[in-house]
Structures are given as C-alpha cells and as structure tokens.
Length: 333
Image 1 (cartoon, rainbow, N blue to C red):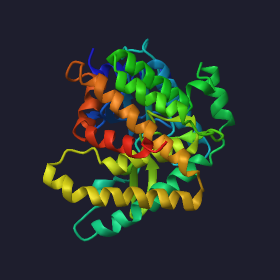
Image 2: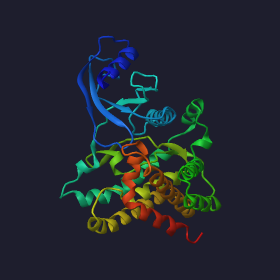
Image 3: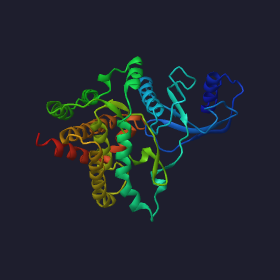
Image 4: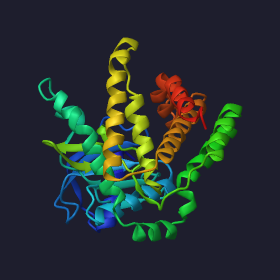
C-alpha cells in the first residue's frame, strides 16, 4: 500500500469519513535526519483537519508518545508549537508510529536571509533563541508530567541523568573505555539540578519559523524532555558553537569565530533573563558534547542510511571539536 493510501486509511477511520480524498496529495519536505515528513491537504474534511497538514513518520513508539505529549502539552498552554491533531502507533496502516499536525505559518531561517538582511538577522538570533527558550521553560509542567507518567515516562527517564545513562549504553555498544572514562568525569562532578522544566532539546535557528523579525513557531520536538533548564542551554550552545553543517575547511575557518560569538551572545542573553549557575551550564554543555561523540562512535559502525548513522554523519566532521570542547570544559574539574 502506498503512503497516500495508508494515510487515507488512517484518516477515513479516525474521522469516520470513508469517502475522504486529498485536495493536495502527500508531498515530502526536505530535511529531517530521523523521520519522513510530508505535507498534504484533505478535501471537505471536518475541523481541525480542514487545513494544510503535516505528517511525520517516526520510529520508536514510546519516544513518539513522549514527543507528542510534550509538543501538544505546550501548545495547549499557548506556546508556539504545532498542536498534535492525531498520534498513532506501529499498529496503524503505516506500520510505524506517526504524528499529524497543522502546517505551521512562517519561513525557515535560511529563507529569511538576503545579502542585505543577513547581518541584522544574525544579530537578532541570540535574543530570539533565548527568548523562545525562556518562554518554553516557563510553561507549567504539571499536566505534561501527569500525561507522560500515564504513558510510562517517569521523571527519572526524562532528566539530565537519563541522558548520562544513555551514554553508558552507547559506551557498552561501542565497548569504549574513553566514553566510560568521560562519563565517569561527569558523574563525579554532577551539579545540583534545578526543578525540571520543559526542554525542547534541539533549539536552533533551523527549528524556528519566522514572519518578518518574529518567531512564529518552534518545530521538531523529537528530543523534548523535562529537565534542568541548563539542559536546553547546553544543547543549543553545542549546536551554535560547533555549527555541524557541511562546509570546507577554509569556510569553517571563516565561520568558526562567528559561530563561537553567536553561542556566547545566546548564553549571555539567556542568563540575563534567567540567571543560571556557571557550573551547571558547563556540565550540561559537556554532557551534550559527550552524548554526541557517543552517537558518532556507535553510529559510524552502522549501515549507511540507518537512523543513527545519518546523525553520526552530520557530526563526524566536527567530532574533533566536540572532543576539544569536552576537554576544555572538564580539564580543571
């Protein structure tokens, strides 16, 4: 059965509309390292399905539940995230989990930039990221926590230490003494963790949509969890500082000082809005650097095209910089 037929089977059943048809068939989105993403529109569908829609085909049922619960939970409370209209598991016609959301308004970051606007766009970016992140961290967590627990996601599987446990698993898969040694450094120097907040887990410019100078929507909640706010800050620092995008060595030499400056300005702006402990931020930045190194080490051994291999391939060109940053942070602990 083709994707279009599978989707109509799912929606005809859910909406009790056996004659449901497309007005715009499935069209794949570019991007997305982990999931298949499509846009489409239905003909004469009831609200809220009578608008342009997005289908995301995912992989792990439990992770998709976590993603959908958090994304929908923050959207219900007014945060700028696409509401989840429908979530399904591996027993669906697709044979794999999926999420269905409205198509969000706005332009991706790279489409907002011209030669004339590039400098001002990058100057605004640290404040836009910090402001969006703080707004997310202020979303009440009680209902989200309860829904996650009802689906089997207890708090100790969602916090920063759960990520450290994931690194332990990667170390076992790779049989890596280096990963074990570095994870032990993080455990020995673990800071006191703050009350968990909703963390996006992958907040960077290409997961935002814009209208003019304003952020309209935050996309891609695949890595969302409830953790110390420094968890989110540390992840975005790694993304901004390392800039894991394909480029030549000469281009990276030019880009790297700007990437480092962007990361510093983002951190400074977030800490102006929400003062966080220096050690906690550095610890989480090191945590994310090590987690990414672990994914590179394990993913590089897997078949080309596999989910973890695709992520590893993105980060492999900057793996030495990840190692350098981890050492730079932890060397004096």
